[in-house]
Image 1 (tube, rainbow, N blue to C red):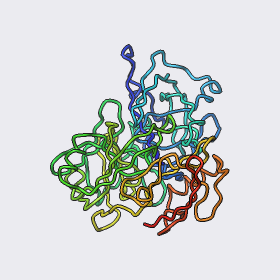
Image 2: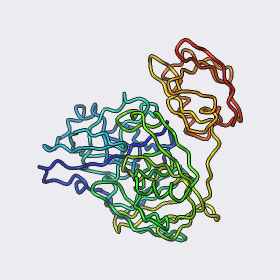
Image 3: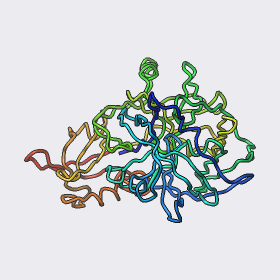
Length: 395
């Protein structure tokens, strides 16, 4: 299960206010380094509102979001007009905007920024990550921001940063999306949203490019079922096809030898943390440029990883079950099916698996921690209707 928490925001047709242009940073002539932690490969920042500490997700692909419980607690001012949010899988919702008087990130004081009010604490499985809100791209429009994945830090500044060995891409915005950079496949140029709220790699929800990948005969894998979630909860069953793209570039400057690219019908074009971790990144919102410094001397080369070819999900009735299957994988070869209940893996009893246990498993699967995915073979006990059977999967 992957997370895509980016969203597009459209102001209501009667609105005279662009929420992206509201708010200001009180500090001047500053550069501050702030620690970030990662949960399910999503960056989390400690912030302060009204002298209370909270944990907010850093999501450069989303508008800023505050939990609804704080709206009443802080008596926040509501904007009269609503906006329509569209998440990464096309789910629309009408939401209100609220002005937050003050917010502190490290020693940096932000004032009068607008936030969406959303109660996503109960939206499983996003609730597994345990965070209070979202710091989105609208908060940084006056700043220069450095994402330092290696040292788990974000640097916020209003001054020019050192850019030695960094290569530049123009920063674009489409509507009210997050910052975008250029990706050149040779036969097609696309603009990709830099989305730190997405824990996987590159997603291109554009049929035209997916069809070109097919025409060129690129190696691919197809997965069907429930395999991702967004800010609104788990997405509906769907299909994505992943192609092993080769010899493409960022801004015609940074060469990538090979990298798996997910395609679907979402119309989203996103680059998440699994891909972004290959770089130090500077987002210059002032001059509308994004700078990349590749962390390794060699070009990025990532092939398809070996997989058993199934995804797991949990609900109260079925407990742990198979939610998605990859075609031509060990799971599909053994005729495993979506909705097969998983009773055991490698002798571990999973019959009464709880939501909390699933969250722990999910967070492990989204990290480099050793799980069953690191094994070359696993033994599973599954239940389909009244039939219980044991299967051995080998990569």
